[in-house]
Image (cartoon, rainbow, N blue to C red; front, side):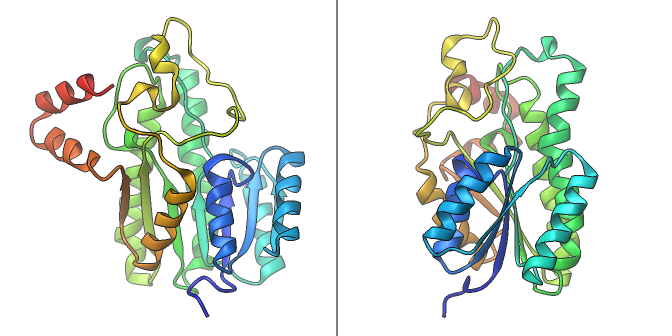
Length: 267
């Protein structure tokens, strides 16, 4: 019997993109799934496909920026499965914009989803993950380690996710809960974004591309999902893809001016 057999995995933003690939990877490894998404039709359609393929999947339509939705959602998951082993905080949005032209309201809106959505789900899920010595997987970004131009409030939110992940590691590890921060570069897409980018006016065309024009190859989401499962099994603290980006991050910490030069050169 494999490590993931009959474990219960919750994936926010699990109806499309990377979230769907992560959910499918856990399901194919033997886990039972709860996928949470904002669009009712999408989440039920994807769950139907997974159930037909033999992966037990519970679809839930919820808005993780609403505490009442989060409370209802996780109560339903525990009621349905009786336990919880993994929470994947994947739901989130990117954006574009000059930082000085990004309105405080835009910062607040993106922060509410990317950061506070992760906080809400984690706080409600944690009491159920402690008994199972479970896993919390927070999907960050290369922008969680190094900011770049023309991405508005996005790096601010992902830096916050990175800090929250470290706090969780320090506080929950003694209770047996593993926390993994995933920092990927741009992900290959087979379809358009579910939600269009905001703040694109006046932004260089190249920066409108996935990853805001960072000069790294696009990541195969299926391979990334497999790496996430492996990192969880080994209870690793972080997964940075591509791994070579870690050198840039280390240089930026030691020599910020050189780090800025490298970011400008590679974006």
